[in-house]
Length: 472
Image (cartoon, rainbow, N blue to C red; front, side, top):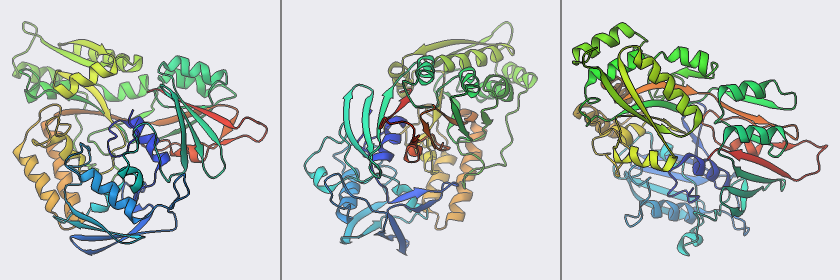
């Protein structure tokens, strides 16, 4: 876990940082940029001006966030001597400068109508940046929550500023243990990473309130396109048509998901609802395998890598069984998270399953599908290359209007859907279970922790601590 927003690359750190810091820009329900701590105007295609507004907060020492903090944060991210994962996405920025204490100008190298959406990065205090404050372990921001201590691995204590409410964030990796702790009152709230069976069980417990919402986190099967077997499009198509998505969603996930065809859900402004689904079609799958040279006398055998999470292993086993029905033999390999993710980044896999969490803007296509984004430069872990996609991504960068950019990104989604470097699976619902001591938590489609802003201890309870459990 890294609580320095400039270097955060995991979902848990990103969710926590949203509590400690403020951002120039936020996203609305359709993932369009709206003012956060600043309003903006476009003075020219290459010139944006941001003016801090009344929502600007104070740091723990009482100093009000100002324009210098914004400038220093973005300059440090863009500094080539640093290894911020956000450098590539912000590469269009030529200069960041303060006009006065409340005004910041961004000067661009190239126009991008979506530019404000890239500024959803937490702002750090300039003086602490200059003094090399250890943000990674001691966050220091102007957000709704103040970091108090990280007393031990997986145990953070934070305080909500408006009322002094204390929260303990506790890591409990085992889903059954998390559930039992909630039922015994040892924790007050848990979010996500439970099996459907545990969710169903909690749903009928009288002292537990289950809050659920449609999600936007995208689950998929990824292929290694440099592998001699999975580089064959017919093999990837055969896998796609052998998976009965809806059966898994209905029977295994208890309906707590919706089928996906691309990275963004239909309600997202860059979503593409016109894509033709890879329907469950075992006969077509077998035909494709025969065309690729596989059959009863020469069966296709693939290695499927996943994490050691029990529910992820279960899903992998179900997919293994479905693929076996069309003659694809699957060998499942499960590993602890560090080993598993290390293999994926290194390209040491044939098939793997993962999710993209909290994706807001379609520049993600460049990060995971551009031929220039092979690790460590990006997250093109399957080594997918298509000159047509590279060309479309360049055109999207050069588009002068959001409408034009939207059309191009939908073309990108269609081409990737055709090439199938991923088999899209589903968007899993987001949920939280809260115990009898608390009320008011709201669930975000991306699974962030912003709902802690609304969580309240019931008046009959005197304890000033609320405990939340994470799976990470």
